[in-house]
Image (cartoon, rainbow, N blue to C red):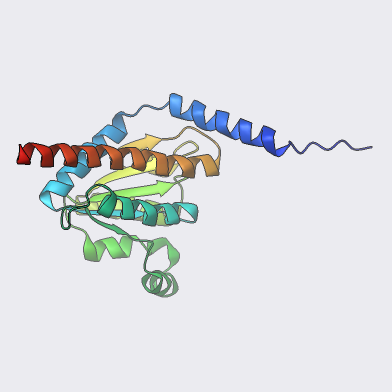
Length: 202
């Protein structure tokens, strides 16, 4: 008789939690600190921030754009000028159909981005062709490029100017960590904004 090797839900959940915790504990957070400080400067200087990814990372890009627009500051006009390049389905399907899926983000950057703006790419593998095209285009424009990358970091790891590498061969945990890292940045920026408003009043 063949034994059932499928773990119980409880065991899988416990193992997942352990892998997530171990990856967090092993992280070098200096690249994320660099990104947080850069985003703070973008907020003050009204620079533009763009995010992109595929699949779950595309959903994360939209989620993070919301957090950076509103979550860091509830005062109108004080959030980041941020856009998820994943959000407009008409643009994405047009570009994918007419010029190819590899260029759905890079083409948008050529029209929207300027030197000194920020590009944050979210990728489990770091090897998606449209992510590589976006980073190369961002670098040519003179953007500050960041990668939040899983597995071995892929090709994007050596192309972005700053890389937060989640050294885990698990797509779902990689995607979890994208949100965790950006939620950390959001909370720091929110607290910084609160302290600034307090100092201005005082």
